[in-house]
Structure formats: structure tokens, C-alpha cells
View (cartoon, helix red, strand yellow):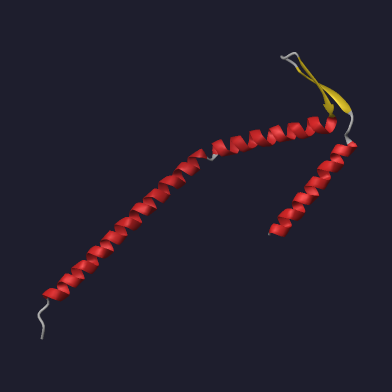
Length: 107
């Protein structure tokens, strides 16, 4: 699996480099409400936009999974409580059996 991940990373890196080399034109980016004017390579503008979109999407997905993570934490806590309760019940049963064997008349 590690080899596949490495190969995919290499292919993506090569594609990004090829994209950057073929889109070296300088563009001017102005952000409308602000008096900001940036000159950058077209590849940088596009890759930066993709990066921002990836980050925003990751944050949105993480926030969307908040309820499921809370449910999972609650289920894990309930499982842990039930396992402890089962262990106590098994210990009580073992103790009761041992006590019953001691109280049983010997032939």
C-alpha cells in the first residue's frame, strides 16, 4: 500500500510541475473590495485557489462530521461502562459459586 501511495504522490507531483511550467504567464489579481493588487504566475494563482478550496472543504467536512464523532464517543463510553458492568457481574457470579461450593455439605 505504501508503494501505491508513493507512486500516486510522484504522479501528482509531476503533473503539478508540468502544469506550473506550462502556465508561467504573469497575471494581475485584484481583490475587489480591497485595494490589493498582486502580480503572480497563473500557475500560482490556480494552485493557491485549489489549496484554499481544499482547506475550506476539509473544514466543512470536519464540521459536518461533528455529530457522528459525538455519537461515536458516546457509544465508546457506553461500551466501556457495559464491559465494566459485565466484569463486575462475572466476578459476583464467581464469588457466589465459590461461596456455594464452600457451603455445600461434604459426602
